Every structure is written in C-alpha cells, then in structure tokens.
View 1 (cartoon, rainbow, N blue to C red):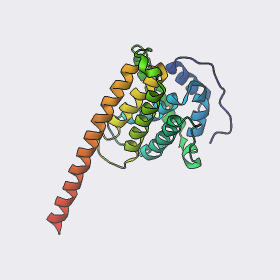
View 2: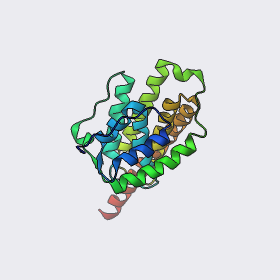
View 3: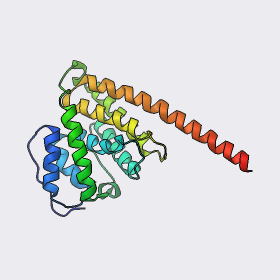
View 4: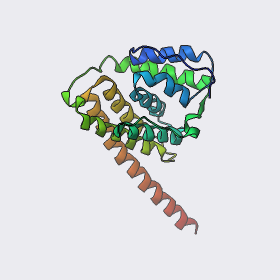
Length: 210
C-alpha cells in the first residue's frame, strides 16, 4: 500500500478524474485502497466502474476473483446504504504502475467515448428502490467475475454489465441501466452454457480415459 496519500479533487467528468489519478500516481505502484480513497469523492460507482473495465478484454485475467469480490462487497454495501467495506487483503492488492498506466489509458479512451452518450434521462433512476436494485445487479456481475472459469468471454460480459450499471448510476442514465440489465442476462446465459459444456467435456474425457 502506498504511504503517500492521494489528494482529493473536486467533481469533474470521470475521464478527467482518471487522468488526474494517473498524474498523481507519478510512477508509483498503488493499491486498491489508494484507488478507493482517490475516487471516493466522486462516488463508489466510479470505483466499481474502474474495477470492472479491465475485464472487458476477451481473455481471463488472474485478478478477477479479488476484484470481483471487491465489486460484490462495495455494491452490496451501497444497496444497504452502508459505508463500503473491504477486507484488508483485498484493499492491499497491489497494482504495478506499468499495469495501472495501461489500464487507465484504456479506461480514459472508453470513458471519453461513453461520455458522448451518457446524460440524465428516464426519471426512474432517481427512485431509491431502483438504485438498490442496480447495486444488486452490480453485485451479481461481481459474483460472476469471481468464478474461476478459464474460458474466453466469461469475464467480459459480466464486466460490461457492471460498466453500464455503474455509468448509469454516475450519470443517472436509465438507458445505460437497461443496457446493463441486458448484458447481465447475456452473461448469465453464456456462463451457464460454458459451465454445462465444460462439465460434459470433462465427463466425456473421463469416460474415454477410464
């Protein structure tokens, strides 16, 4: 965990905030705790979006389980109107600056693109019950990320649901929430199919060998 605390900044667009995060990192390795503290002023929806974006790649990443766990704990805390809590081993998960730099540059490009389309719309996003349901949807996406499945696509679909849900929360954009719901359904169907297919393949291989 970095000993030097990151400065708090005023509310800006999310893409700009990620640029400032990269600037303040200044070559240092950061932990999830560092990222959490820096992004807290903007809201934990930004932090959830940050945790989900790396997994949009079609290849499985080795940190999907701790990141998925962090997403689950934070989003469930938000659903119950409590201060998000993370276990120490998750908060202290280090991220090398070289990795962080690549992730943030990718995130900035994605956010600049998304910010062209996001805006407050559909009044139901201001409903407290809907916000709780969205937080639960993000938690469900985090649970899917936690699954140790070495199958392409099993991370990217849940990550996309988390990203659209989180962007919907940040911008109060009901359309993005609806798109997030669609990706949640697609992720559930795809992962269920992958699990069944994998189980049948293992069973066939076992029968063929033994």
